[in-house]
Length: 130
Image (cartoon, rainbow, N blue to C red):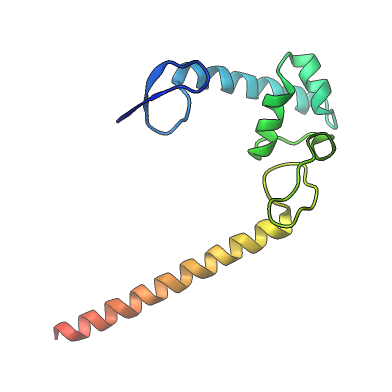
């Protein structure tokens, strides 16, 4: 295990998968649930309104939106969120749907090509051993 300082509270913790300590992760999960529940009860609500009604900062709400965990009515306009590949306005995540599809299909193609090469190399190696 690796020891790290939590970027939120500064406390030292055993880093396994989360970038923040367990206590801050628990608080973060509670914030996320609060926001998600408010949006579920008030569809089409803006991030500003969610922030005012829940007491959770707009910055935290927009961080969840950039991570692709949430979307709100005003995300693209307020945060000026754009696709990192083509520059089109988006309401969540890092890429628009068409760019995300292109990236995914490109990764799949690359993966399949690597598997094919590995199988061919394995076949060549097996025939040399005989």
